[in-house]
Length: 167
Image 1 (cartoon, rainbow, N blue to C red):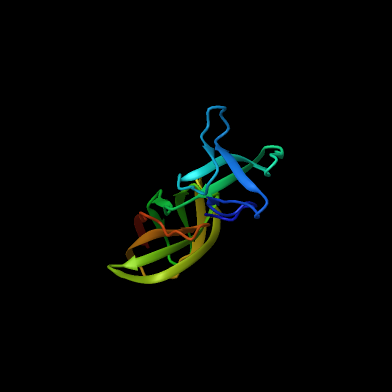
Image 2: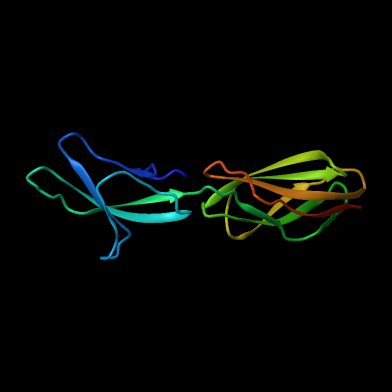
C-alpha cells in the first residue's frame, strides 16, 4: 500500500464494547461484514462501515479508501537518443503505475555492464516525461534503460530500453 490517510488492508473489530460492521463498496447490495476482512484488490477500493454497541446504538456510516499496490510499475523508453559528446542528451520515457509517482533512475549500459547511473528523482506516473543530461561518455553506441520504484516500494516489472549514440 502507498501512503494515505487511512492505512491498512484489514477491517477489524473496535474495542471490547464495540463491534464493527461494514459493507463493501457503495452499492446498496454490497456484502455485509461483522468479522475481519482482507482487502487484496489491486488499486483503490472504497469501503463503508459503522459501529454499534450491545443495545444496539448505531453510529453514522463512514467511508474510507484502501489502496493496494502489489505490482511494480512498467517503464517505457520512448525514443532513441543521439547526442554530441559534451552536449545535453534528452531522454524521453514513461512510467505506468497505479501510484501517482515513482522514483526513476536511468542506467546506461556498454554491453551488459552498467557504466552510468543517472538519478532522475520522483516523477508523476502515466504521462510522458523528459530528462536532460550532459553527456561526457566516449563516442560510441550504448543502451539506456529506465528503472523505477513506485510509492509502495515495488520495482519495475519490465524495463524500457533504447539506444544512445554519442557522436
